[in-house]
Image (tube, rainbow, N blue to C red):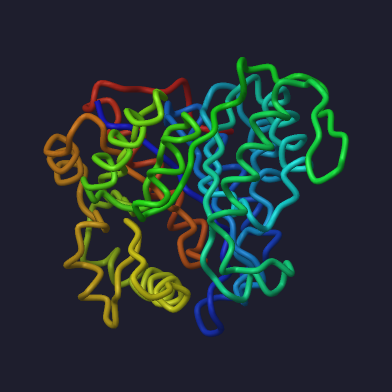
Length: 336
């Protein structure tokens, strides 16, 4: 059965597409996470970027704690923390606290990052990001033991011990063979940025060489789902926001990089032609879900590009009432 995911990066719309505030987006996002929890969604996914004009969420672990407090059962995936930009000891403490506060519901994907502006802002040498990430991941794994150890001439002890043993769920993110080998060496699962099957092959070979065990969780499925009774009308309403989101995401990509949500769109028609976008009637969404592999996900990004919350709520309510039960799933109740 496909997973159902809600994603938030909390980006404001550009001038001319509404006057929403950041506070309004955060309020709406938390209400939507409560809805997802009640409706039976599997995961809330939160991402990280820094210094973006549209206010892209810069502190996803803080938001993960807020989502944990607003919900009861749904998993929360931070995808991804940009590892080299963080002190790994402080990062370990934040993950441990989130692990306790959420009763073990927070999964953290940690990647190397790519935007030059973010590395400059953090004072980190971007050319060393792979080596820094691997070192920081090793520090995290030591920190999760709650035992003292030495790192960079510092005596470190992270307490309390994690609630989840041996440690909270940690994935290595990335989209190149080096990332797959890094994850395998450390015995951590890999969550690639895309569905290139070669990464799983590289991971398996390196794991066999190192004597480690793990797995690759390959992403698949549409990264934007919208359920409507009139797709043409809905595309007219949401298209400018989705195009803004796609263009700004495309603008921050670096050479040779590819990720599953990325669409190099210049027109709304480019979005409509992409399998990343599923905008359809309940019957059309159900048919598309049934064609997906069991490991795929239907991902809702209800505030994509700063979409008006009222459009998001119509989408979510229709999905809960008209699609989820026919997929063999149902939640407890709609939000108050």
